[in-house]
Length: 126
Image (spheres, helix red, strand yellow):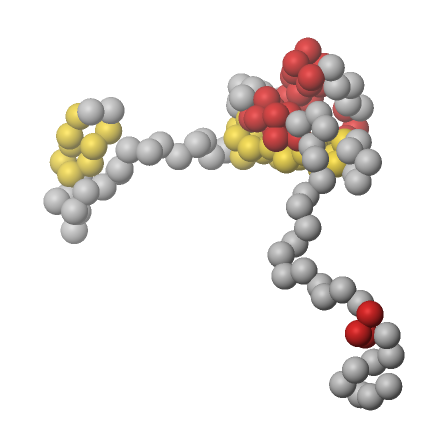
């Protein structure tokens, strides 16, 4: 045994440089996240599962158009109807924001003009 070669090191396999592939997704976490995100008022969603594939938490960011209790009911119903997945309402956390989704249209051009809904308006710049 030497300091540069600990005992038994020559018998070990080298560590892989790439991370191991992720475990297969049996019922579709991404499918559930996409389903939840498609609901009215939902901006984003994240489903957290245990190593066994059971849902441990669902985190959702919504607009303030609907009450959080109604959003939770909608999520429960959608998961049951589309995926046959029964979720306890206590596993769903809802955060609400006043911000809406960003529009993809530019709000300011270099010339000082704003483009909204196909119309051009003069912006007041100083």
